[in-house]
View (cartoon, rainbow, N blue to C red):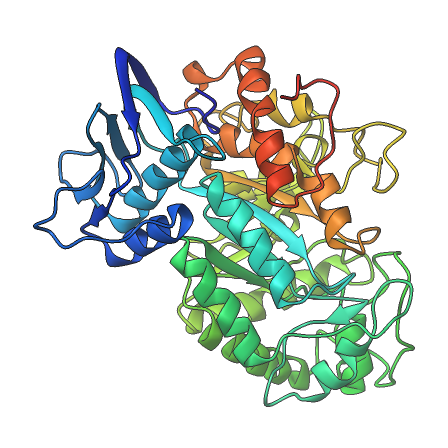
Length: 467
């Protein structure tokens, strides 16, 4: 059985095969998940009185809010879960058990499954190169198929500002008009961003918006020069260097601006998180950086959102509930990460040498970085989030970022994301005892034809015996 991520418990039932009957119907106690499965299989939904070939049932006997149980018998497939999220993940497993095309049969099986980590994500950088709504929706579809439940959108950087803010219209008009290498850039209107959020929510994916500051801010400084230290607008930036921009930390207009932006983005984002970046602020002195974070973290908290930041924010005093996103590499932790640990911060793990999807697979990969090393599918798979930080660290989960300095097309996204995203998904979902590289590569091989059918231009990693 080629399920990715591998379930916590899976027991085949010998001699049993379910065959899709010609008059098959789906019965579901969740209207939304039932509709999702009905569309995927092109089957009708039945009322509760009908005898169903597939039944989605709510049950308090299943562990966890995202857990599910799946049973395949000769005459019926039953998915049970406490919540819609659990039913949705059970449906994703069912869709992988089914062959990619007719005739639709499933071997008998008993599955009991739940995630290891609550936070299982990927990041798409739409600031360096802008990608429109349809590309983001397609990305969400692929995340959700592998039970990932967070999409972190890197919305602002030196090269572009990608979300409209009514009180600050120049951000979209001026800041959104550039990208790496030139070109017209782009931005999401409030309605477009809300469409992304709603589409993600229907697939149990939480959107985490990132407004990067106090560095990575050139697009904002071009739009509103009063935010710059010298009060003058810098030239628009279309290169790939980092660390040269900073907000005017001691000017009240800076915090008025941040208040307007944070209020607008928070209002459009029903999820609990708002990411404030905080990395690579080389043009901000240490003292100014600490001053800035003392001011900005409460602005975010006042909107009801949990502060998230790259691990450099660990140097600043902690605000309650803060989440630190670790992107370091190697065995040694830096001072900021140790400071975050000492303050009791929660962590999302994005080690650059394991899960940065913008890194090349090998020296021959046509696009991508290599500063964190080459990252094969096996590199993404062969690590344990439970041992990356010292014992006792509060690890919420794992996120795989895709930075887009060299990513300009959907095909570029596909090349760098697949098949590595599937490896990250199994690291985040499956218990360590169930994980095995040789078994994984065999299961993953069967997903190549499915990606091809969906138009996903994945990298044919030679480590995988593709079907």
